Every structure is written in C-alpha cells, then in structure tokens.
Length: 443
Image (cartoon, rainbow, N blue to C red; front, side, top):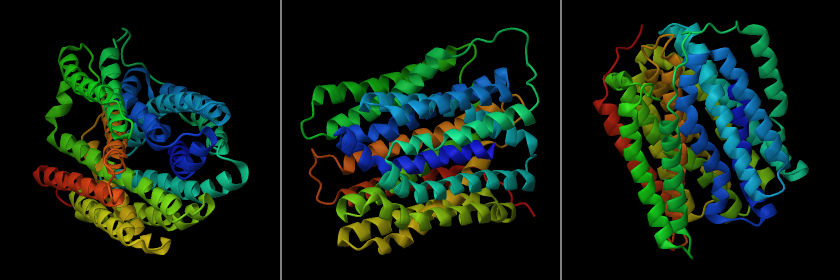
C-alpha cells in the first residue's frame, strides 16, 4: 500500500520542479502551464469519492489493481507525449488511476489497524512513506530534468507500478462481494463534482491573463457555481450517492475535511511559490532547485515520524493546531523573503514550517476524517478525505497563485498577494477547527 503512495508522491514533486522545462519544450507559459499539475489533481480529487464507493462496492483488491494499471498506462503516455495537449490529457487519466487506487490502499490500511495507537502508527508510516517519495522526487527531479529530460519524470514510476501489481496479486485475498445485486453508481454526481473545480480553475486562469476574454471567464466561474448547486441536488435524490447523507451526520469528519481543503490549499501553493521564486526570480536551475528544496523533503519525513507519537499522547486536535500555525508562519516567511529578495538559503525556515504543517496538520486531519469507520464505509471516508486533500490543493493553487500572479492585475509583489490569500484561508481553517468536536488525548 505504501509503495503506491510512494510513487504517486514522487510523481507530484518531480512535476513541480520540471514545470519550467515542460513549458519551454512546448512553448507554453502562465496559466496554461499550471494545467499539468491542476488538471491532474482536480481529476483525481473529483473522482476520489467515486473511487471510494467503487472500493466499498467491488472490493479493495480489484480496485487497487485497476487503478494502478490505469495510472501506469497514463504515465507511459505522458512520458512519450508529442504535444502539450496530449500531455495534459495523460495527466487527467493519471488522476483517474489515482482516484481508484488510493482509496483502496487507504481503506485496506484502515481496516487492518483498529482505532488508537495502532492506526496512528500505521497512518504515520503511510505519511512517512509519502514524504519519502517527496524526498526522492525533490532529489531526482533536478537530476532527471537536467541530464535525462523532463519526460523521464513520468516514466520513472513504471517500476513501482509493477511492484504494486505483483504485491497486490500475491498478498491481498480475493474480494468478497457485499451484495449479489448490481448497485447503481452516481455517475451524474461524479461528473458534476469533477466539472465544478475544472470550470472554476479555467475561469480563474482565463480571468488572470493579460489578453483575457472576460465573458468566457465569467461563464466558466458561473458554470462552476451552477454545477456545485446541481451536485447538491443530485446527491439528495440519488439512490446510491457518492457521499451517503449519513456521512454528514458525523460532525467531526465534516470539520476535518473542510480543514483539509483549506490547509492543503496553502501547502500546495507553497510548493509552487518556492519553485517560481528559485527558478524565475533568482535564476536557479532545476538541478540546484531540487537540491535547495531537499531540506523540505527531509523535514517532511521527520515530521511524519514524530506526529503519530505526538498525536497518541496529545490528540489529533493539537496536531491540527500545530499544523495550521506552522503553515501560517511559513506563508509569512515566504512573503518576507520574496519581498526583500533574499537568497535561497533564507527559504529554509519557511520550508521547515511547511514540513511541520504537512506532517502534523494533514496527519491529524486525516485521522479525524476516518474516525468511526467500518468495512462498509471505510472506502467512502477514505475517498472523501483524499478528495478534500486533492481538490483543496488544486483549487487553492488556482485561486491563490492564479490571483497573485495574474498578469491582468499587474501585482508589484505576486508572492505577497498569494501568501496573504493563503493566510486568510488558514484563518478560516482555524475557525473550523475551534468549532470541531474535541477528542480526549490517549494515554
């Protein structure tokens, strides 16, 4: 299970560092280039809840194999893509594969370990492996891009795909069907959930371009609002909704997923802010950028290992509070460094704070989001949590970076504008955390 998380994490960070090289290869820049990242995360996030339902209905083993094969095939296409449009399309299909495979992997872990210290440790290992993937991604991204070319950042995951397929076939027992009757899937809800953030991202990116067509931007953003309303109405009437109505009766899960959206928005934005400042403002190359950001990845591993022990003693709520405060501090640090034009070394405090925000905040929220699950809803809870993480990161990147760096706004300091927007989002997350039900620390 952790191997799957590992190569997906590798894929995230290597793409982040290689974005400028991809843009240069296809003569693409600005908002269009962000689709290499945003398109993937939105598709994955929009389909994760359907993936969670598929896991509950058809079994963890079957869906893990299906998702992994789809992800691997799309990675191969992305690495060989002759055009930017085909690359983006392959990234969208990668998101489909992740949306099916990750809930299956996470649901397996949840059901193998009961609530309490055992599950905290298991989720900590899961997060540590993901952080290890980020370390490898940061370390390899510059080397691969500089010496092999950006295409290999997608091809590098293929050996991991093969390992996951073999391990799944060998170690996981065949799935037991929950019912002999076919269960209808909420396809309209899935389409609407995916279309909503895609339209929103398209509208924000279009509005920010200097030669923007405002009617198109307004139509896209308005369309995202309409699809959001339609999604709620469809879910209320669906025979088998993506999110069963009973899910929202668990207040702790709802608050945890809302907090995840806002925290992931800031964390994902920070990665792009680091990359843009290093490569565009300071002129640091991809190889050097990967090395400069290596301390961030190492700190992520450390935070992911410490957080579960801390959470076992002090509770998930305290971890979430530390994560939110650390991320807010990181945004302040990024704003200061980019405003004064300091060198790469001055980003180190911000990187450590981002690592603490992800290690403590995301793990704490993840634990809260899957509390009180059973064999019949673990996939759904996992899918919702992963969707909140993915959609929050994609939407936040689109909103914070899209507005801050919009050519149409001619911002004097786009980094400062993006950081202020992220801090506002974190303040909202803190308010949600305060209102959330508190659990007692486990001794």
